[in-house]
Every structure is written in structure tokens, then in C-alpha cells.
Amino acid sequence: MDLRKLKKNWEAFGKEDPYWAILTHPKAKNNKWDLEDFFKSGEHSIAMLKKRMQQHGFEFGKGRAMDFGCGVGRCTLALADYFDQVDGVDISSEMLTLAKTHIGHRTNVDYFEIKDASLSQFDSESYDFIHTVLTLQHVNPRYSKEYIKRFIDLLKPAGLCYLQIPSKPPLGLTGLLLRIIPGPMLNVARKIKYGSEPVMEMHWISKSEIEKIIRDAGASLAHYYARRTEGGFESSWYFIKKNA
Image (cartoon, rainbow, N blue to C red; front, top):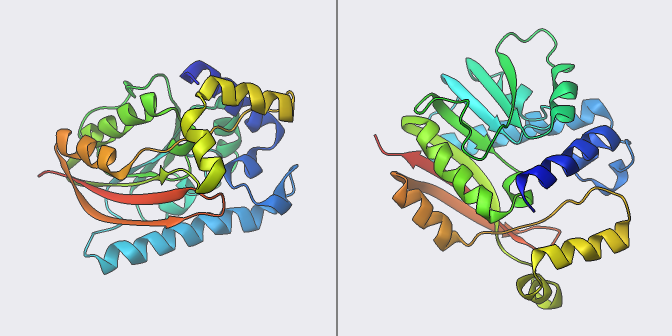
């Protein structure tokens, strides 16, 4: 799926069921998320991230941060409690319009719509920290690999990127089918099953491919962990440190 179609799908999610599209809890589908619980989940995620980073000797909460794939600001607002400035970035104008309604009293949050895969509206070496979780898994690797390279370019020397993306497909028949059936054919099957509903694609990139991207872009893998998710994918979390 190209970026134009990706944007179309996420604009639809932004109109129809934005909070569930960001955090797909089964009981929250059809606009049933309690908003207090929804944003508390972001606060919890960022608090756990801070704890893990400190356990591994990483500094957390200084300077300027980017929340890539911010959606309605679930983690953006939580990051704003720690960083001087946080920029939420998303492909969906519908999501961003909704995100702005939740800023409240905060003066250190801005939102930006993605224009292209190069993130050309942002300056190189302008961020201390980049956060992207539950986002790149929905983006064709053709584009997500370019985003990862650009994240490293956007980091200041010794800056850190916290990145999550599946590294292996599900086990068994489902994983086999995902490996051998072309993406466009899968989308046709999804359309047959779900009709006019927007498509939420799932992609993965192997750890070895991510490591090569990191090395070639002038950074190092500072910490890594992985686990199988409920959907069966093996998801990986990378702490990427740009060379000083």
C-alpha cells in the first residue's frame, strides 16, 4: 500500500473509530474507549519506558522529542510531561485535528501532518529523542525503512530513538500465508471480508535488516528486546543511539 492509500485509510479511521484504531482493545471497538483510561494507558506506557531507559543508563526527559505516528496524542501528551517540547507527527489530518482538542493547558506540544516519506519539513539533527510505537507495523517496509533512516538523521549527535516494529510474522499457517501472498492480494481479501471498512495492514522487518539500516545511517543498537504479541507477530523494540 502506498502512502496515498495509507493516508486514505487512516483518515477513515480518524473519522469512524479513532481511539480504537490507535489502541485496538476488542471491547473498545465502535467508539467505546473511555477517554480517561485511553490517555492513562499512554501515561503508563511512557512511565514504563522511562523506567526501562533509566535501568539501562539512558537519559530520559530532556530537550525536544518527536512522537511519530502520534494519532490522537495518546503518548504525545505523556511525553510532554518530561520533555521541553514534543512534536506529534501523523499522516492523518483527522487524527491530528482530534489530537489538538486534547492539548489542554500544555504549551509544549505541537502537531504536524506528514507530507512525504522524507519528513522534509523537519531539520536534520533537531531532536534529542524520537518515539514511534504501534505505527511502522502498518506501513509498507518500502516506506518504513526510509522513515527509520530519516529518524536517525533527525536525531542530534548521541540522540536516542525508541522504535517498535514486528520482526517476524505469526507462526503456523497464518505466517506462511503472509509470507507467500502478495500484499495487494491480501488487501483484496480484506476488502471481501470487511467490505468498505478501512484497511489496517500489518508488516514486519527482520532484526538483521533493522540492524543494517542502523549501522549504515551512522547509529548503533544500544538495547533491544522482543516478544510474541497477542496477534502472533514477534514484535521488537529498539533503542537506537546516533553516533556522537
